[in-house]
Length: 336
Length: 272
Image 1 (cartoon, each protein chain N blue to C red):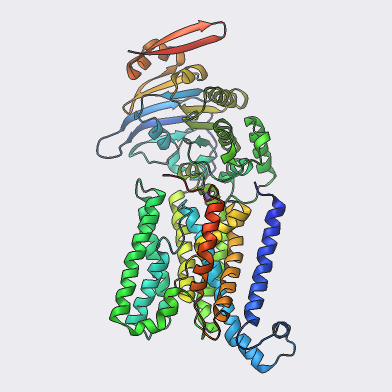
Image 2 (cartoon, rainbow over the protein chains, first blue to last red; image 1 turned 30 degrees about the horizontal axis):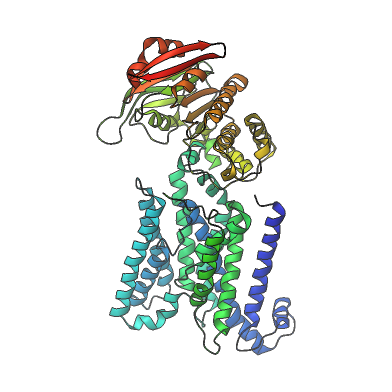
């Protein structure tokens, strides 16, 4: 098993990489802002007006959005994988992202004037998909594979819905290209983050607090029950929490895939399967990963900006294959 | 969630009542009744083996006992109290269940045993000193000190089952129910495990109820037997009474011959 000192080292490394990624993302960009400017902004020191303007109105909101989305999706992934006892599950694979995406597009197309609606729609869509998956997972004889296949089907259905909206209402596409690939709008403002933040931050704290229940669930339903857990209720609550987190993330970052799948796996690979450690570490690492990828997305093809979702798939895909090959046992995937 | 159990009255165990009592249980998976009018009581401090052919309802009976499945009729009393008026935690502090072998979780032996303390916590959080003591005692009792930091998946089947027994012990209950604990184990591991299970009874005075497939093991290690067939309670009695009655022979359609040697008594089964 993995030693305490290693867990500690990895935790420290995760926090450091988050701070470095966030600082770098504030500094890097078409307009030069230096590290001293950031320190000056924090400590109330001397800072030029353009630098202050760029930081407060452009860079920091963007970094904050990436932080929120990354940590929310990673923790949602931990919850979903634990609750469904399925290492293949993640918000995008089991259709939660697609559900949220469909309802966001629907609201943007039908009631474009209601600017607060997409966020609510993302929650509703995420919850509806999660309820479907939950019902399928609960029904008798549904194996872990069935749940994933059902998720693929749900993703396809909502995907078809999204495509229909985009064809019927082509104007929706202009606003939604970033949304569909997964990424952040350059004009993001702090006030747009308030709603997601008041969902995500308490949600993550709650998820970390109850992560021990996921360990009990790893023993299987019958044992969890005999240990005094109300399994169905716990599962429903945790899946609901995961949907809230994923829905909030989708409302700011669009259909960002991969974070929810890859980060929990990476953490288990590094620190073992104890969810009480995996959950908080995933929050930190997921945030760092999305912030870093988003920075790359902004500067790699400068002056053009590509969506973070593209970078993430390019980096995350091969890395995930590497993890699978390196650690076939650790993923815990076995025949049904 | 912990708060909830405080609101419920604390039960004083009725020391006169049997450990577990099944009162007129009825259960069906579909339309056909599977278990009907099933009544039985398990005395304190007894070791009872539940035996019967495949599909006779042994495992279903265990699931009804611990409330994983709800009986459509009748009730289960634990130490004289109906499980219907207990919270799941209150039940889990009285009766521990070792379920049929499942895919082993990715966990160290110590972490697994610590899960046994769940009924005493809001969530599997930090262990207090009592918890650590109970976990330690359980590990020593099960004889798995050497493996405490090992990954469960790296243990042999027998060692792994002992780790699960230690988890059940950490639950600190007076009643232990085991559903086919020896499945997949080789003959030596079977006997080691059964010896450990009997020690829970002799040294810790726990009431043991176990579903068991191997008739020789059942006859050798239990004091009482409950013979089931097609969801019916065929006979419950001491091992001698059950052997005497011929119930096993008729239910399993086997002939049982008893051989006594210097090493002890063994039962050999012949197909009819």
